[in-house]
Length: 391
Figure 1 (cartoon, rainbow, N blue to C red):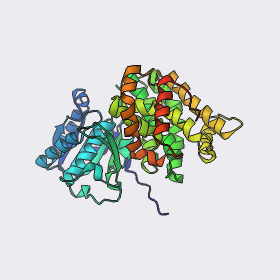
Figure 2: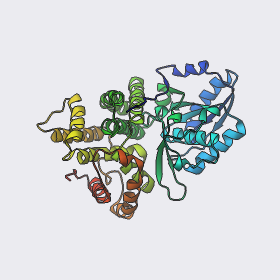
Figure 3: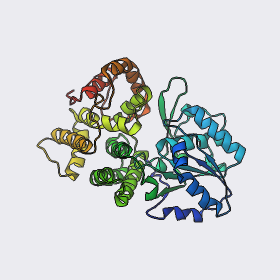
């Protein structure tokens, strides 16, 4: 089978923003959100580009879990401005909004949910894309994925296309320096989930495996330091790199069950993305490894990399899941839906819709063990109480 490993040009480290001096263009359209605009990060890029004689417009209406209508609004502004470069400055939601708008800028009548990996969308005939992350988690700056939300139902859906890999990703540690402790933890667990799921996905490959393994090592080493000391620029930079490597891994192999469960929680309970997928991760390891020797071996490989060994490979996989829970506890990350602040009444009201949305999520197709709606329901019930998966 022929495969491709697609990544953008990546510039990282202190003063990485100086790479803007190497870009040739005239009209920069910056996609960001109001928080990033208020703290001056978008303006910092704007000032640097204007000093290089660029015409710059800032659009700061990106939202958490962007809706299709939001992408349409940004695309309309891009057309009116005539952008030849798009700059996404923010977390994963900002980059999702920018990529979705990029598609609609080039294809105004396209249905985003109908976009497939095989479509020719010609985005670079209109503009090129630079991504500058302000969180260390999603890895969206290096992926070919978009996650957006239906306006009416609120359901999140993901799609991929090779043309959506950014032309340039700039990893500037100063841009994540002020990230609050909880978001540092949530986004870090998002990166870990990307890497672990990439390593067991049905489309795993040698290149994605290499990126995933290094990302996992780095998260276990640097995420606690990043949470403990928000001013630790070395830890911030290492987590930016880890998230980027995890993005390279899953963009080229895909994510699985934790993202199906997490996307659904985010849609129905409005749970922050990194919190949702990170919370689901150890439960999905226990489920996927159960009576499934090949997948248990993959998890066992990752556990061995961290010095975790048990007699059986499934037992080692379960210890790996526990090591993730221990990491979560060390950074103040909830290990059950109840701990995340969801009441039993809220959970019961949301459960049917969460099961429905999880079964519809495209990530479920890459899960290395078959699963149906009954198992999804049981998993959510176990996750609510923090009970280990035993089926």
